[in-house]
Image (cartoon, rainbow, N blue to C red; front, side, top):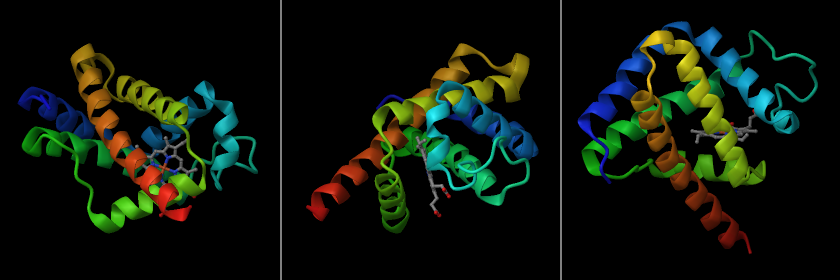
Length: 158
Ligand code: HEM
């Protein structure tokens, strides 16, 4: 895996900027997710019974922050180890939650697109193709690790 020092730095630096405004960032991420794929609304406990995205919801914020943080950690690992390694219990949780919710490959792509749009919004003029590619690549590796765990769990259940 050829994740460069520059790519790692782009992800880390932009996360440092974006995490200063988590409420805006998380709201925007979900706005984008629902704009791209309104049908996923029902999957989220904090969205399914509301007409608008809640502005002050701990679970919504937690999911948004975890996705960003884990992609950032994935970028650091890709640079250091050449692969994404998630600790056993976290990986199990990620696998089982998303398997239970029936999250599909296209839905992983939806969240990636929403994430990139959020980076664009959060970084404004400082955002460029290189930065978006770095986030995208790190996300792909993280998503692949989660999907592999989901498949393992599914196989074990049958
Ligand atoms: C690749 C990045 C992702 C990461 C790191 C991630 C992480 C997590 C974590 C840690 C939880 C919470 C587990 C708990 O404590 O209950 C969770 C829940 C969930 N995730 Fe993800 N997730 C990712 C991608 C996705 C995608 C692509 C979808 C599809 C739309 C999705 C949908 C959900 C749903 C529906 C829940 C349950 C939320 C609730 O109703 O409370 N996630 N995710």
